[in-house]
Length: 260
Image (cartoon, rainbow, N blue to C red; front, top):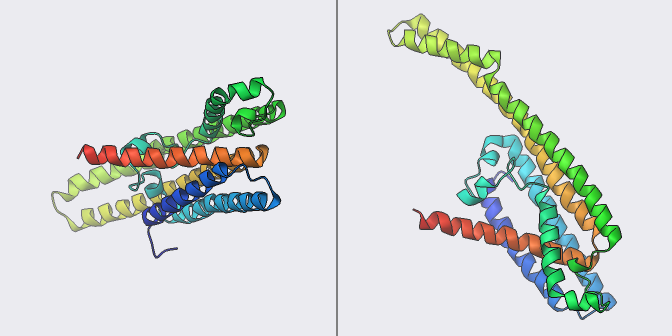
């Protein structure tokens, strides 16, 4: 895992996601095959796609421990994507907007079928029971997302706590005195800078905790939404998620390249 950077891992993971997207789309196109073998193949694919997401967050968790600041300021994505990040990734509540957007689009496209009482099987065909469960889940995720956001905000404020203010003052004082020479001043400055280094390391440890909480909510939200949907609906949702992720990444990189 340490033999490649997270950026290198991310590029490979995105290629794999594109491959899974192709397989998911093929599953939908072959949707007329409703025999047991077709169902088994579809379920096996769903399992592999979810394991792919789980693998991503396991590797990311490892890298958060090694370089939380790098994860929070990723160099492997576009500036457009970076502008929409929430604590190093996508907002968990965005999953619900994606679900309802895709459901609405499919509803428009299959409206006549639904009017005639025909089941579409896709996200246009969410039952009232599913909608209630999704709404309940969304309320809980909104609450957790808000709590993590507030936790991060409070932690960010600690950069101006008394110890940091005192250390910055002492460092400034010794830097000014050192400019005039003096071995003692150099030793004092080195001591303060060492204390500052330890203090900043402690701040980074706090960031690790918050990012891990955010990632746990991201993966947990995805799994719970998948758990509410039917097998066919899961395929449609994961297709929409992969399409949005891959195309935004692609467009963002092209935009950055065009502006250089």
